Length: 500
Image (cartoon, rainbow, N blue to C red; front, side, top):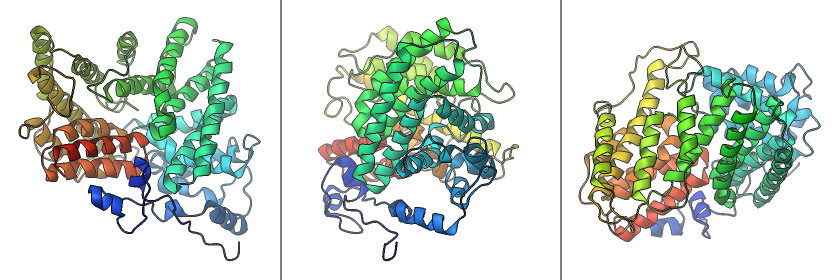
């Protein structure tokens, strides 16, 4: 490795141009394309550009080989970068799960260094994004052990895990080979799923959990990788069919273990996101019967001693509110104005949710008490309150728009043209700038859809800057392709309106 630099040069440009699929001039600190379009110019950090061949050589030469029962030094980043390990589960516990109990990374499951590197990224950076930091510690402590055991049970889960890790590494480094390799593993996972579903045995609960989890990560992969984004609806519908079949054929409880609640909430939330992603375009039909069944089932708490907020590992706001949002968005997609009686009923329900909004001001008390895991109870509640408030305000704004409109065919040029700042937007912008919760919030997927709705409503450069910064920070934290597509979509809207 003599003469080899630890740092890679990025030849693919800034993250903003990369996400927009534009050729970047690579000018620093802001490229010309971002300057001309008045966009935030974001570049990968030093750690993201570190050559993994160099770090691998360093740890091989500096560290003795790990053996079962020991933890090698190169596993230390678990406690530094993984929100699960930092806030919910000690790094030593995670290391034991990944090395001592299963010796996963040294097993014959992995055929190359690329697979190992992608799998490490999956555990360290990708997997934590699928659970909310505010969820009960029982979800976090059981999640990784469940995933590890299922990886050993079903090769399809290993393939999609490698694909997810590769997708995130590709965005971070711009390495085209990672993208190609990730897509190959994604395709392999789909093939294994199809074979497994053709001869499914309902008595093999753990094996079927692994199949369900694989489908779960197939659609999550599409959230991060634009190349598979269009596959999300078919994976969500496939997951719904599999859950329905399992409920009819399996003798075990639908929510026997915490992982089952994670899976049910994940499918329900992704169905919600696909329904509301384009509030004014009919491009996905939700399975409302499944939504009703899931809502009833999820009323029971996995951890009865904890609050409903703690018992929500994925959705992060009330199920009743999610149902209301779907109904309002369905009206927004209707080409004609809704009936007055329907609007009256929805406004009455909306008023009840609006009365639950907190008073103006920040949500977190400085001196809040801590629970047994070291997480501040008030901070956890505020995270849930923050998410709920933004979803209430966004759907309230949508309901006002659809109530005042005569047609819902062109959201950019007709009924969405702002006529002054609404109270919903003013309140939302205040919440989005709350400094005490902003750090955790920017790492969470829950805020992106409300930000999209508020982005359509802003009518001043100052408010545009708040929305842009919120989405940009979230993209830089989680590298979600969907997050970046929200920002690109809004930039085009703002440019057409001459707000920039």
